[in-house]
Length: 436
Image 1 (cartoon, rainbow, N blue to C red):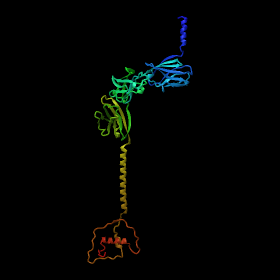
Image 2: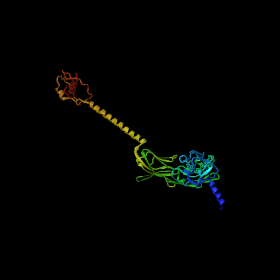
Image 3: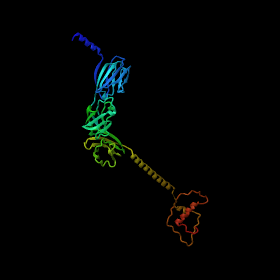
Image 4: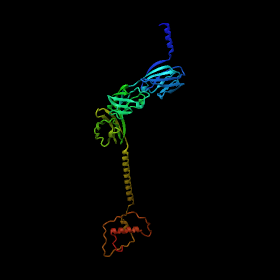
């Protein structure tokens, strides 16, 4: 190479912006990423984005005097540290969406300071516990100018349609009605992920994602769903309340109870047949896919297992403990019995009190023979030739005591004379007289 050519090459190199750099960065969907750029302090810097497979060149942000002005497609997702670190014009993009994939340019008055190529990475396998919601990732290069009516999304499982959105109309595959969905708001950002609610064992399989017309494969173009056994639950229920167990599926199931030395089938969901322990206490709520055992007792403590009748896989395991407190109808019954016992006790107490009062008021007045024999000042009258009265029955009188009358000093009281007269009649000491 001659000297003239050497000087020309050196001149071209010197003419290129010395700070211009190129970098490739990788980011996971939903994670933050920092797009680095640096230059002289106090510059007005602009970031631009060119989307992969599209010719759109969009403004990401403007940095001026320490302030950041996001572009319309990046509002709320970009931040800058140039105010704290002069000359540092890096951007933090969070969270990363799939259609952020592309080329980013950091420019100072038209001069290129830094170019960053962003590659967005998506995981491809999902494991979820039975009954939980699964999210199968898929991302596509949806234009940032697209609208909801423009979306064309298709999901398949093992070659069969699961979910399709086309011309603003949604079609579901068998068994996925009202369980499978794709958010149209997220799809406009390139997120075509499929959400499946209340996963079942039958949901397992190989899923594929497509978008646009003609169909293009998403990234990743497929995802595999694994449905695992749910973790066991430990529940404590008060005696008299109800036990509620989610069946997590509309498929036929079997509910078994395991206690100390006991293994019993409570329910077989073919024609909903209940075992002896259930009696009138068991019920299945079809809309909620829930098994209920009402009015539990301490004998119901144990392990309840829900099993898929076809695959024999465990759907749910619940370990139940019964607390001693009673609730619901039980305290009402206890209160009623207690109140009845109190009322009965009060009635017995009042009855006994009345009898004791009556016994205290009863006065026994037996005849006093000594008083009759010693009484004086009396004239015995006898009907000549008349028969003497014969009284073989002793008269006993129970009466309430009469008011006490004072005894006269000149002679016996009226009460004493009455008693003496009765005693004479009983003892036969006085003959019967018509004058009496």
